[in-house]
Length: 321
Image (tube, rainbow, N blue to C red):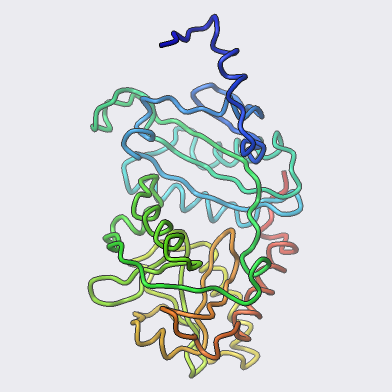
């Protein structure tokens, strides 16, 4: 077995470059106290509790036209998630915002995705959070994903997940222990569908692997699950705000957060999926049965167009870097 130390470490690293690393543009690490643009240096200490316990929180945002969209909403949710597990960052949200914009500037990309992680920090391989002397902050900038409907204008296929829904206490915190979410994504790939959605023990719709789900009733109501039991998706909340214009125009009759059953889905005019990367997705089938007329509906299309315009032109929600 080869021994690696400072004398040969860089030579070892140089031989580890992989094609997919070209998608990683920049990373800030509070452990190192700076930013790097070399993917081989984008590392996290193995004894950070983020690594071996999933003890940390994160939030992900998108950038278009050299501006981060809805960044402050993402950072506020990040801080709420951190507080929920007894974490905080000494410099507060202001310092995180400044470091995030600095990392984006270092990446120097017109469009990209960003992820901010507050970790428990290095300190031990134990389970106690008190063994980490101080938290760590990691900010990563990587290639932007393509909105789903751009790749699949026919809409998405969805099945019901068999992975148990997270208890509300954990579902409402965007923590780095994402094993249930990983298993949900594995289901969708193994089953050959685009997405899966969970239903809780009471039979009410929850969320997907990384997405919020909702529907449009045949009465013209736009509904999403109650936020007490699911993550309060920034895209979901913004879409609900944008939908108010459709109510004023008469294209929708109402907007609400409500319990949604599988029967409601099967009787819906439209089923929608929303998320930071995917924007607004129209569902063509659920459990192999067409939703509505089996094609993207007018409400989903209108909301996706409004969201895309908001991302590109709403200066109140765009933070330049």
